[in-house]
Image (cartoon, rainbow, N blue to C red):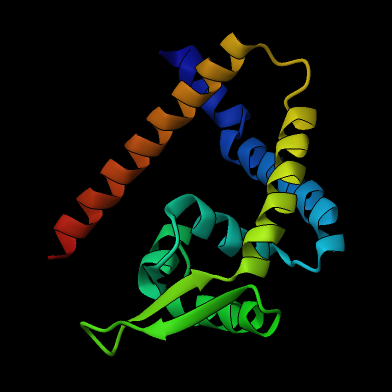
Amino acid sequence: MADKQEHLREQSLAEYLGRCHRLWRMVADAELAPLGLTHPRWTALWKLRRLGDAISQKHLAESLEIELPSLMRTLGQLEEQGLVTRVNCEQDKRVRIVYLTEAGRQLITQLESRIVAIRAELLRNITAEQLETFETVLDQITSNAQHKLHQFKVLEE
C-alpha cells in the first residue's frame, strides 16, 4: 500500500492523460484544418454523425460536454459553411433540431477517413490486447470519476 501511495505522489496520471489528449487533438486539428474545420466545428460534426441526424442542440451540447451557448456559436458557423441546418421542433418551438446538409455529409466522409488514418498512425505499435487493457482502465477511471461527481451532487442537495 505504501508503494502505491508513493507511486501516486510521483507519477501524475492526469498530467500524462492531459498531455496525450492535447497532442492527439493537435495532430487531429492539423490534419483537419485543410477541410476548413476548427476543433469545435469538426468535433460537433463528428458527434452529430455518431449520434445520428436530427438531434436537439441541447442534446448535442450535453454529448460534447460543453455549454449550449458555445455550441450555438459553432453551429452558426457550420450553418454559414452550409454543413448543417437548424429548425424549430414541431412539438416544442423552443427546441432547435440540428440536421446535416448534403455538403455536411460529404465533408464527414472526408473527415472520417482522415480521423481513421490519424487513429491508426497514433496507435501504431500498440497491440490489440494493450489497447483493450488501456480502454478498460480508462473506462474504470471514468466510472470512478462519475461516481465521485454524483456523490458531490447528492451532498449539495
